[in-house]
Amino acid sequence: MMARRRRRYAVPGVEQGMQAFKADVMKREGYTVDPNRPDDVKYEVAKELGVPLQSGYNGGLTTESVGHVGGKIGGSMVRELIRLAQEQIVNREQP
Image 1 (cartoon, helix red, strand yellow):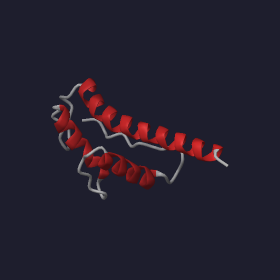
Image 2: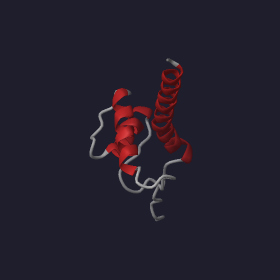
Image 3: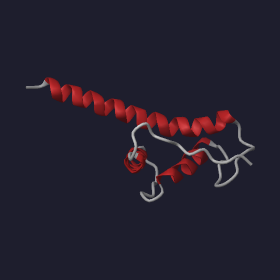
């Protein structure tokens, strides 16, 4: 079994903020999110998409099916980041 890859952010110390952001975004998308374990939302997303993701080893899943789960979460986060950036631009342009 392969070791789990540890995600590293380009900016040190943002891990907690990113987890809180993920929890907030996924709550607004209608998912049940435990603020202490925001990564667990992936199981709810997987269930909705029909992907049999479970805690522990998932070596039998295809990259494509797991990518659908991550894409749904990451896509929601990216859309929110774009919305926030656009809002900042508009606010900066107003006198």
